[in-house]
Length: 140
Image (cartoon, rainbow, N blue to C red; front, side):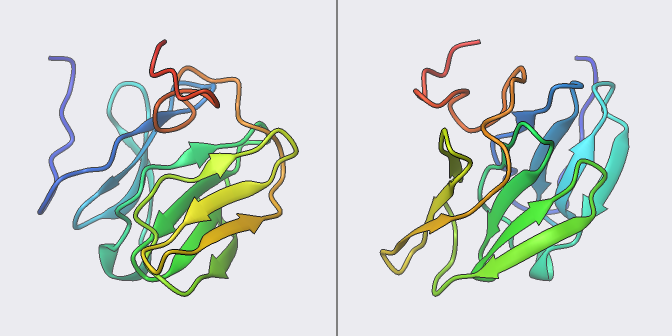
């Protein structure tokens, strides 16, 4: 084992890996974190009450999109700053998808599918989203 990042409570989300090897995931009790490839924490974004339960997606311009159970889609910069957020009408428990035109798609538990204008396409990175790529191949 190279390293381990313990969670304070509950399961973590599937991670995404950025172009620089940074790992992005939800860690219950800490909310949403970025880790260096060696496991050292870069930053933590404390989304509402630690309710991030969806895996993130990374765009080509470095924006990290992640949904939350506080009915919000967050757009975070690579350094952890909030770029913007968009309120929905239901918890976001699914991973966002980034379209070829930069549109961010996300579903909510109230049965709605949202298409939100984003910036950049899916990142050219080792693992930029849940299931790896826009075809969801799950292959590296």
